[in-house]
Every structure is written in structure tokens, then in C-alpha cells.
Image (cartoon, rainbow, N blue to C red; front, top):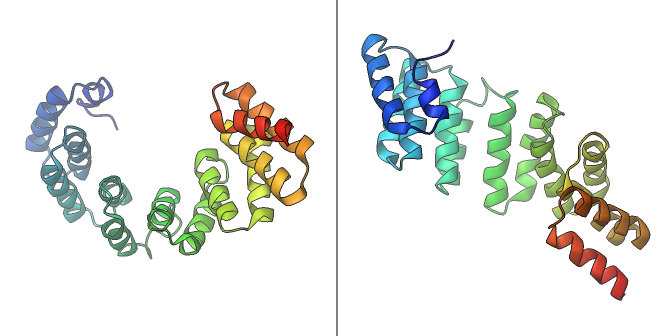
Length: 214
């Protein structure tokens, strides 16, 4: 279903979008989608309290609406309120434990608080829900590497680079080849591929420089 304010949102015309959203709420006051979209628009223009109230209203109207919880949780996350985001999402986790985005956001709340090991069960559930979202899978792989679980991280990064041109995945594979196997030639090939994909990849340039100087 499309709404008459969607074009205005996509165009970044939030003032017009809000007017149309309020009109839609008057016509259909029990539709949580209007409050979710309204909350997102209000957040984008910096009206945080109003955005929070809109999203809470969406949840009040439909307690099984995963988009409402995710949007509010994401808002808390973006504001650095990681514990609030986690508390909200865990309150409905039994219902949405196979939701990719909710699992990802829960994992990242732990990552941003420095509790990397606590993020892994949520990353695993995210991965089971969708193995093809390579940007989210990259964050999982990066966290595994940061925990020293290089074997698992390498598998995920290789899966990504086999299917997609992703400079950061190539760079991190290069680091693994260098630190785990002491294979500087393989590391350099991955760094060069990262630069081929993203010519201004500073870390990859530095990696090659360090290998050449070593």
C-alpha cells in the first residue's frame, strides 16, 4: 500500500510530507503506518520528542508491528541511547526473534557499548534470517575478527567478496592473510583489490606501503 505523502518524503520535502501525514491521520486515525512515517519525518527534522510520541502511538495501535519497534529502537540507537534501544527491542524479542533488522540492531547496541561477545547471538540470528545482506554480514564478520575469531570472520568475508565488490571486506581479508598466515603477497592482493574498488581507501594504501617498506 502506498500513501499520498510518500513522494514528499522521498523528495525530502518534510514540511509537505508532515501536512499530508496529519491529513492521513485525520482520515484514518487507527493506521499505525501514518504514525511510523510521521515519527520518521519528525526525527529527520530534529523533533525528537514528537517523533518518540508518534512511534509510541503506533505501538499502542499495533503491538505486533515490528516496523514501529524497529523505527523507535533505531531512533534511540542513533541518539546513543543503546540501553533504551535494547530494552525496547528485547521486550518484544520473543515475537520477532527471527527479524533480521531487530537482531542486527540488538547486536550493534552491544558493539557500541564494547560488549562484543554479547552481540554474537544476535548477529547469528540475523545471519540465519538473511545471509545475503552483505553490509550487515560484514559487521558480523568484523566483530568476529575483533574478538580474535579469525577463522569464522574469514569465512564470512570470503563469502562477501566472492559475490560483491566490497572494499572494506577485501581490506580486512588482507589483514587476516597478513596477521594469521603471515602471507604478505596474499594480503597485498586483497589490499590492491580494495583500492581497485575504492581508489581512496586509505587503510589499504597504508597496508601496501607497510608491506613494501617491511
